[in-house]
Length: 313
View (cartoon, rainbow, N blue to C red):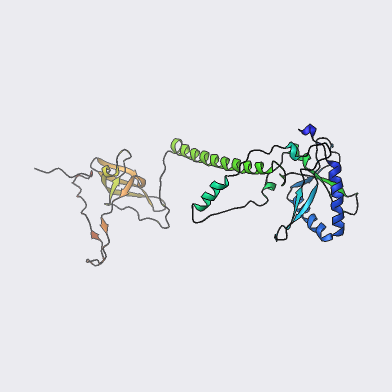
């Protein structure tokens, strides 16, 4: 289809001269139009075409202004005419693939809108202008512009770098791009979760889960009862032990301790034991404000493996 498309240069030039007459008759209109062009250049929505670039495989688009007085921010919008063509030639729109209709069904959209009490809508600012045109196809979006309409020497040629409004394929490109990035984002989130799951299972030897703290916990003391963690047993089967010695670090915090169980004495890290609470505060203390003993600790001669001691004869 590219070979059958004319350049439309003569028609675009003639219509731009008519637009220049409007600029001369209405300087305020030209100022607003020029501001939009300058914004496009600053945001790299358009780019100049070098004078030495070949005139083959290109298309010139006429453009005009659409003014909406109900808009306070973007009152003037530039619209490019992709349906323009010479006699016996094709227009740009006639050579473009319109694509599939990716818009949601209106009936289903209304049902979803009424299914909840609150509906949320969003809008993408200048949605079409957020999608770039491939560099090989940008010459098919050329147009004329002049910063001084009164002289023909300042006539410049620009081309668009973003998808323009009014082209047959623009709605499909917009919806397809949004769906593509949403699907890609979902796949990236799945890959990210899978990566961390595999890293935790295959590379992380020990993961200690703990809550955030704002103050230091009280260190374990000698004769304090603890439960010895055993990974192959449930917490109800953990052995009962007594702290026989603590080993403070350079900062005074206890991280290693010696414990005594029914199977002997062991040295363990503090992360391998769980303090056993044996006292609690009551609402109205009856012994001068001291803690009330809830259970009696076993004597050194008793079994401390979490089970009852056998009867003696």
